[in-house]
Length: 436
Image (cartoon, rainbow, N blue to C red):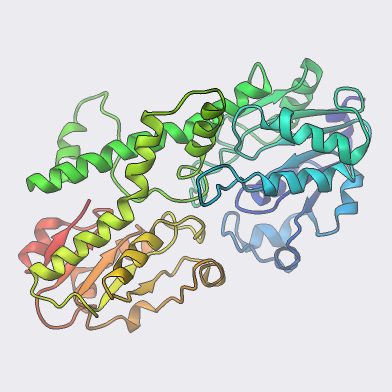
């Protein structure tokens, strides 16, 4: 059977397994063309979607209210679909080794509800070989079916950028792959329904897996270089942002900036690649060096906050410090793997218990994952130091008077991690100003 035609003729359904920041927008996009079942094991999340709420903020409540996605937490409903997309998280363990538990669990659930003739496409970021060596055997074991005979598999890495309203699923070229030519063409045709930018047919599943994992590794390494430059230039008393603005006038200078590297992609994917490299007997040098630098930046920011407090003749122990921003990136509610928590933990080592303000963050998630309770910006007053850690739009619009209102008596310490404000303006106002 041609699965693509069965879907477009509404004789069969497509399922989306995992309805987070990646899976939910994909489900909503496909529902404009096909009959879609949206499955997630989190019943509370399903209830939110059914009530027309978008907790991710990726497509908005209106889109959720109007979508035809059939949201469910009942795994048996997956039997109704013939084309399955798995988009569950692939985090790392505390020792930075891949945690494939969510992917394995999703494969078991799907395997128990897999029909003959199905195509299963994985979108989760993995190291080369996972789809065929880890997921396929689970699908076969749970279903009793034979891959290549009874069902087919493919891989199409997600490229959604949470919080980005410009680079969306329909505007980013989609990498697709399949275990054979027939599968590849079916997968490509299905994704072409929603991706206006078109698809790139990778020559194998392993090539597609490798392409995805190096995308974020490359970005991670480039940011690590910027962070190392920032450390060096700060020691020299040179403003890093000014250096990058000057260097950026050359046509081929890459536009990267220093910062905290968290989230569930850039801060995670390099470890998947280096883990697989270790399995082949190769110990990564450049990739892991970059990871060490980026993983240390939260501590580095906190240490500089302490140094600036001392320079401002402020007592460090019990200092009043506010942190503006807690999510892993700007204008996004996701707090998973945020590196701001490293700033918090390091400050606590100095007996500083900071107030944290984030108007965008998922409050329940922050409490569940970190035990963090947010403070409203209007309640932050009499601070000794303020650390602006995330470039939310709500913070970009703060005027000097708004920032000054956050402080108490004495010299004001402002750490503008992302360089949102004018150094000269705040230094003229008497601030001790620092940025990466």
